[in-house]
Length: 534
Image (cartoon, rainbow, N blue to C red):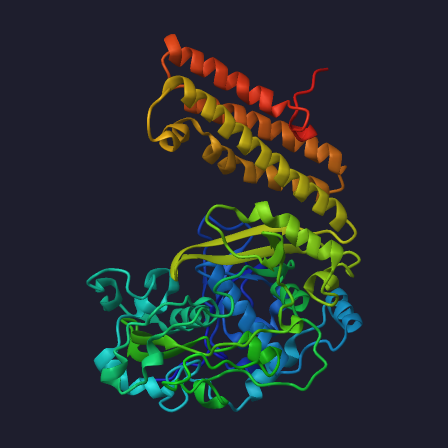
């Protein structure tokens, strides 16, 4: 059984105006299978699947890649970027990059290169399976598990349930879904221990130790354009070095040997094609025919893959730095902080351009384009994936300073309002539960922070959109502050409504409400929060 992503429909896309693109005879692909919109997408967009060749040949007639998860979308986009670099379909200088973006340089050269390329592309090749480690194939029947282990949001920590029942679920994955899931594992896989009995398989012990993959612990930022082609060009960093090869299979280059005495061997990428397609996992997939006769995957093995050495700046084009304990660190997903609360760091990267020639330095060169900045990360706890986090932020050339100011001060406004709610909750607690134990739980009863944060994101994005559309920053911040004050007042009221309108509970209600208003109008409170009188 064969399956080749170059010529088989494998990438879900949103087509422009709902009109599926049609492959030409040179693409050697089947006609696109489109499906009606599912109600969650824009009314003018239709869903379809394209092969990798078609995705690049018709990139400017495709609105966007559409993955099952944000991480899957990022993994596919990264893989397409790797193909462009391998095909030498990329600008060499920053001036050339700007010309590529503004004149919308066609990407058909890469599509032609894919059609000609003689490398092994078969997902089920017996000796060089695409994206996999062939040394594991012989162990699939005895030690493989169900395809759920391949899908990162199902695999959990690769040991999710005590009986591992979900890992042995027999329903196969279609080959295209398995391929995209494998790309996602290579990019975002988390560090834990794999469910591989290495000793029984004759493999070294380090083969059970999973390392966190390249994007597994940080926020990946992509610039999004109006079409897939625009998105790829925006993120195609100039490269004037020698072309390097894609990672098609484990045996293509010298890789981690998994020696017992060297569990942490690292390697530095040979170039951007290598970087964007690095094999962060050792994977083996077993082919099976689906009920409709199409190829699928019914058993998988997932083990550790390549470990990258510390990357130079040229390979960290999108990295956003934030200050933690006085030191700059890479922005990572956090359960306690939504991404919009860190957007000021993203806009600071554009405004300051401290790394010089990177994604944000290039975006500042744009004269008319208005890309969105899309931030994506995988939230995990001790290696166990919890959820995907993502958010989008507007960018307008020449307005990065205003967007930075709005995001910094807007975040400060929301943080201050949250502190005011905590203070009001403490006041209520002191009068309702005076002398009672478990103070933190009692304060939590009256703390409206969760409700504030739940509504503040929409207000924050409305503020950024206003600044992007040319409204004065001060006006946008003032409107945002009014909205946050309204949210905070409503959040506290909802928490206090459970109190009886009599005795000390009525007094607690009154004092807590007054405390919130006092906190919001303190001299050191952010001006947008303060109540203004005509």
